[in-house]
Length: 299
Image (tube, rainbow, N blue to C red; front, side):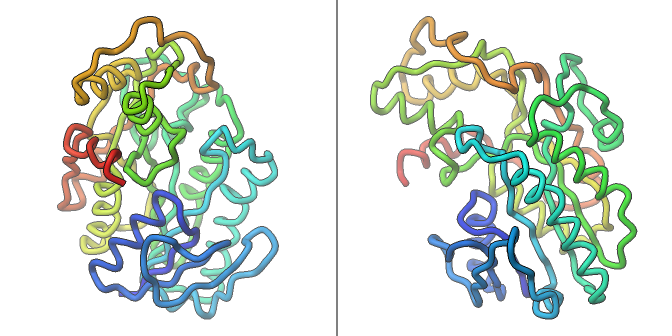
């Protein structure tokens, strides 16, 4: 199998690259810098904002994964223009160009359950629910993901296009500013720690489960469409932080919640219904945070 990944050194692209290495797939990488953590067959340095892809080369891939994105990490302060370009305009442009060169493989993009918007109803959103959501979205990242999902649902393409909507994914290669590595590092270093109210309910899935779902979709010859990947576990932020302290044999300090504010605090409950996808593939995600939390201290 020939796999092409657009985007390098992010959580998704790095772990997909490692999976390709382990399975001896031919692997082409496209991005601003060479991959740091895995091997590849070819590397194409490219700035997707300013430069054109060579679609005659790209179309020879069996699987193309768009793992580029902006706005995911609020601390990076990326511009609105960059967020909409990378999250919406460019993947749509790639789809249209792949159609023109008669690409016959599979193309993958990703959505996010932040598209649901400000929600406090205790329900799991199906793909249709997500597409119909009129809930207020609170940042450019969420708006851009909502726009791409609308396109994915409407596009008339001559190749297989999978748009996987993700819950919170985690893994030991993720940014240190995200919740799990931030908490574990604070525990290990006895650093001060602070959170929002911690009442937001989120689903969590380990990165390896996401990758296995993608490649099992290939093996299952999954039809094109929008598919939710639901979380394996579900916690409030407060429950998750407490568990991480318990895994370390430590007691959660008092008065650490309610000290900060985040845009996503208004998104009280984010839950995806993933039954549609799981009914069509053979892989069942099963990895829990308790199985892998110690990997964060061994990197």
